[in-house]
Amino acid sequence: MAARLAAFALRSILETVVDVLNAIARPPATLRPARVMSGDSRRPRDADARRPEIDARGHCAGCNLPGGCLPSGLSPLERRLVESAITSRNPLRTGEVLFGAGDRLQSLCAVRAGFFKTSILSEDGREQVTGFYMPGDMLGIDGIYTGRHTGRTVALDQSEVCVISYANLMHAAEESPLVQRYAYRMLGREIVRNHGLMLMLGTMCAEERLVTFLLSFSRRMQARGYSPSDFLLRMTREELGSFLGLRLETVSRSLSKLHAQGLIDAERRHIRIRDMDGLSRLTGRGPPWHGGAGGAAPDRPACGRVSGTGH
Image (tube, rainbow, N blue to C red; front, side, top):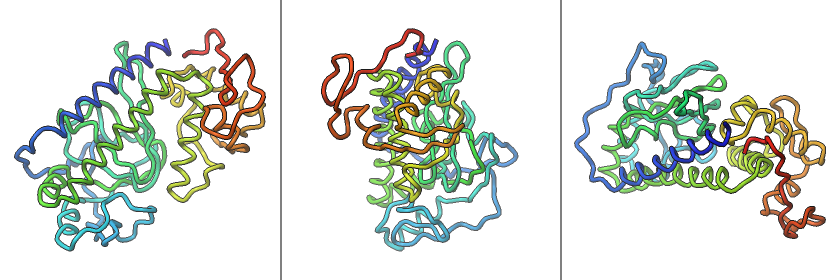
């Protein structure tokens, strides 16, 4: 079953990549002003927070995100254009749906605090997790091509997002080459992320998938000013398994194996990486591997492919 879900996710990602590339290639359409919906928990709501001011670095006033999530070097006119697109800051409770499958695209949302997951339904009605997002990431890009969101976006923690009117952002992109390049770069980053997921699902065994995820999560935490070696996973192990195309028991068994090897400590959702280089060696991206078992290449140990591991 896990293999079928992984194949379904892989096919969906490929279709999304093609759709986004087509969307980039299309000439800009005539845009109408977007309206932020209220009274529906599945969509960004009106908030009483004032529209933030943006400085030349692309930082909103009062935002502590390293690097910000908007382009730097904006002129005063460009800053006013982007400011007009940011409509509100909205808090969300744990488990609250930001976007629902089939919802009309009206806004993109930059994660200011908290964590989110995105998911789609497989052909047999099972949830397939397609991504995890943290502060500085952009949500809602899946709705750009068709004008409707293909899956659900749900808060995994007490969270806050900055709501950006898509129509106003596109207007700013038409007026400013810098904002236009930022929009393309934002789409390109999502394509690169999807390529990484396709590689992971298509070529890696269970242990490699989990290690690759932990290393990627570590780098993303470090880029945001958090500890790269001591962090809390906001998703459940079942959600993590869905994202990696693995069964719940396989995730738990792989974590226990990494702990037994002295590479990590794992207590519920709390992860502490004890040997970053050792983890990197398991994916063939770290210091040379010594003592590989089972005839593996010197710099890449073989994965134990146990029957029923769910990959």
